[in-house]
Length: 160
Image 1 (spheres, rainbow, N blue to C red):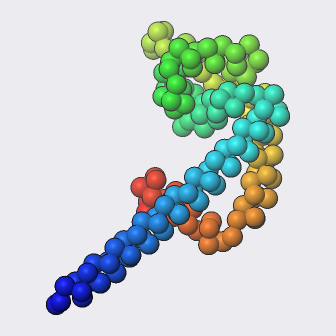
Image 2 (image 1 turned 90 degrees about the vertical axis):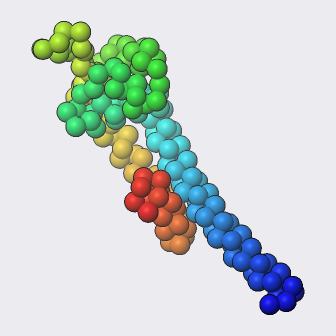
Image 3 (image 1 turned 120 degrees about the vertical axis):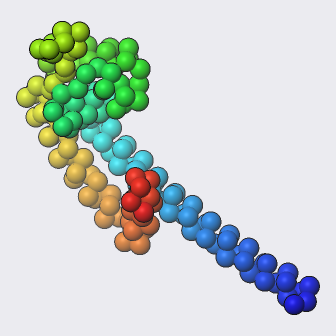
């Protein structure tokens, strides 16, 4: 192969690599755009219902846990915040009647946190509003872009 053919072959390969890299980042961009918009919608709906977005996430994490209860350090881990900040957040939710605390029967050093029926009702109402707005938003995204975003989301969670 001549020098010129070798250079042309390398340039073709580089072009393919560049297109593949660009396609990958286009999928990442679309996925992050969709995630950010959906999270923003959820945050706005939480605020409109009188809940701080992080408090809303805390209620979701507690109620959505397998046993519908969490310890403070578990909640801190799920929210990626310090246990001290989680404790402060829970004090606020407790004052608003959104959570209940109960000592563990076997280990009295452990306190379990559950959500109240009032909190569940608020979560359901927020979720309905979020669903309405997300459905509208998703309808604005072309099907091919939704597929690209989904492919990247699957990759992020180890399914792709």
